[in-house]
Amino acid sequence: MAKYLLKRILYMVFVFFIVSIVMFAITKAVPGDPARNMVSEQLAATDPERYQIAYQNAREALGLDDPIPIQYVKWMGQTLTGNFGYSNQYKKPVVEVVGTPMLNTVALNLASLVLVFAIAIPLGIVSAVKQKSVFDQAVQVGSIIGYSLPTFVISLVFIFLFAIKIPIFPISGTSTPGADYTGLRAFGDYMYHMGLPLLVSTFCSIGGILRYVRAAMIDALREDYIRTARAKGLREKVVIYSHAFRNALIPIVTIVTSWFVSIFGGSVVIESIFLWNGLGNTMLTALRNLDSPLYLAMMMFYVVITLIGNLLMDIAYCIADPRVKLQ
Image 1 (tube, helix red, strand yellow):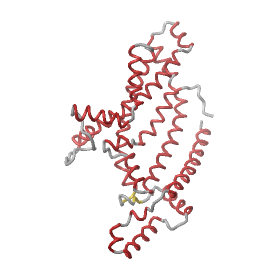
Image 2 (cartoon, rainbow, N blue to C red):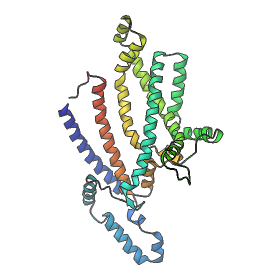
Image 3 (cartoon, one colour):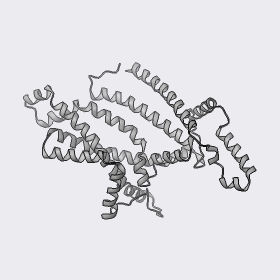
Image 4 (cartoon, helix red, strand yellow):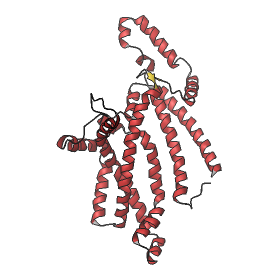
């Protein structure tokens, strides 16, 4: 396995640099001038000469006067040393900009992941065992609704039901405006505001996971070893959970590891509708304002997380099924 891991790490490094070159080239091809966003447009009308000087200083600070290959080498050198640049939109280092949004995105998606798998896996197993029953059909209909409707439609329905019709949750934000809570009170207020986006995120995600689990379990329950286990007189729970579910884990592992990436991904739709200050909304804002250091850093972060997730997927295959060997 050590040889395989070394080869995969070398492959990850190669892919990282190839993707970084492509992303940097795309960024430079986007129309617009980031340096102009750093200089006040009002200054251009009142003092054109000072505006031109400030504009040239901004271009020098961003390194825009250098050839594209030199800009890439400088940017990559800074990135590898942990310096992700300076956000020309927020006027502070990128690391300081993404700190709070990352915590918000991880908190929301991690809570959603726990709920989704805690609900979808048991429902998928029971639905497969009771295939074609009334319960199975009801679960199938619910899952189809969950992953077929657009996220913004489900968000609006949940807002109407749980924030307007039955005012349980606040509509937006991460904390109560004007409140100065600390300690457990602040944590409770934070979780209270997370409630509605968490419900929407969970409802939208359960359907796909549930159907994967159900399909994998149905295939496993049709195998000969399941009939043999039942013929030996083993209890049904042992047959289902110790034999069928364990052998159905391979496709489920694929979904679990893919969600490792989504924990840090952020949902642009959910974060925008509920004004949840997360990474998805932050990257969208950076793209709109041509804040290239910010969205380049975030894109490369997603690339690294995706590569790590794929490596963890291969390792998880071996843990779930000892018959799988990494060569």
